[in-house]
Image (tube, rainbow, N blue to C red; front, side, top):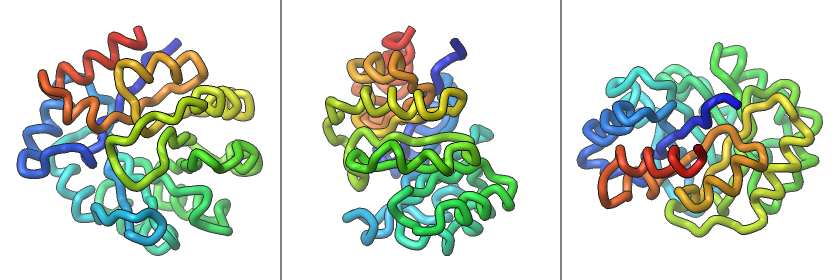
Length: 216
């Protein structure tokens, strides 16, 4: 099995030390950086725009994924691609024209992924999976960092793996050294971690190492 990828989310970073923390994550072996984009409508929180992606791009050569938890994602795709995102994630629930949205991302030479919320059926992925580079399985309700991992999530990851045997599967929410070993055997290949990396008391490198050690 290829190495499980670890993707620190800057939603949990100390923004007064963003450059330092991103560089620490890169030095510690992070595989890419996630920027969580929330519009205060699709989710009850307001976070980052394309300027943050551009700022992170100036700090690292790592791939950057922009997770668009927004209404009308088509309005923002080009902005985030131009800012330096290498992968754009849109929510299945945010558009009624998902195929068109995914194709717009790919037309910009950016990798395309979709995310599904905890209550969204896995079946919603069936017709779009073949066009994707990745599926993000939300293991908390999107909107805020630091939430508790939803216990039935490994079963959902397993069902996504059954539906898409060759697709990269990312899990996002409540991932740490205790929950990571639950989702990797179920089929997860990418782990997003916020508090478990940037909020880990011994430091960013120790947080990444703890998760990496936990999944072997």
